[in-house]
Amino acid sequence: MVPPDQPVTRPVIRPVTPHVPLGQHPAPTHTIAHLSDPHLLADGALQYDAVDPEAGLRTALERLRRLPHAPDALVFTGDLADEAEPSAYVRLREVVEPVAADLGAQVVWVMGNHDERSTYSRLLFDEESDAPQDRTYDVRGLRVVALDTSVPGYHHGEVTDDQLHWLAGVLAEPAPHGTLLALHHPPIPVPMLRAAEIIELADQHRLAEVVAGTDVRSILGGHFHFSTYSTFAGIPVSVASASCYTSDPAPLGRFVSGVDGHQAITMVHVYDDRVVQTVVPLGDAPEVSGVLPTVTAQLEALSAEERRELLSRKDSAFNRGELAEELGRW
Image: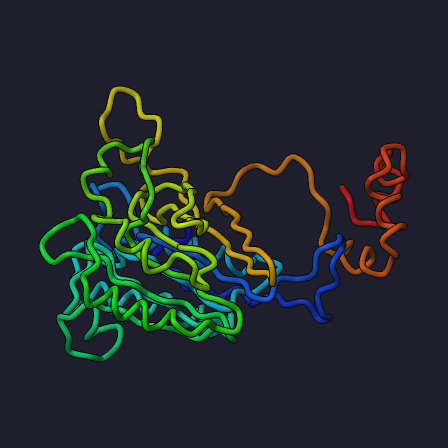
């Protein structure tokens, strides 16, 4: 992970030519980076005297610079500050906003159960408010709705009648590319983390009645500290892991086990007819094989038939290792 005092300064690598699909599907219309639960603490403090949440956040942001599609937005689904300390929100902006600007990405903040509305609204939006922090964002025609499911003084989630009425009004008019609903408490079962059942989103059927049949294409959540997937009212749900510590879904002799490992973010690629979610682990692993990025332009210059013969045919020169120098393989 990147040390907390070391700025993320690597240049953004962008393709110099438009994306040329190498398969049958077009490029996505939108790319969204889904990050969750950074749990920043003031003054570089550690969680459980072991985990550096700022280092985890920096590592997550550094990962975004490696991706083939620069994200259009960074969506943070809650628990931004572990103890809702004002300086933690200030530091959050100092770390995230310069990277987002470099990437050309909007930042979407979502309230979590560890956040406090008054501090959150004042330091992230320059507003004084104790009301639910519900907002909409226009990401090149893709609508992102940040829904505040927090309950003051509690860790479980709720959505009030007023919020449901507001959400129904927002969704009454479809967006050009549809809607992503971002909230902290995912409206799904959690069979791998029984403790989370106690602090889940309450009365989920009421939210289902509002989103069913609308243009909501995917629901993004956090809260559980591990990646998981489901559906809700016929809508795909994707829960991103945390960038700080994670929950072990298969602990040994524990009801709940928080571990310093398996941190990840989720990339959301939106197409005209579908949404693709991909888990991106934050920790580096030893590479055992690789192909240099210079191969991309060479493959794009070939026809679809030539690419298939070169890479798919088992006895091709590439798969026999005879084109290593030409295609940058090592």
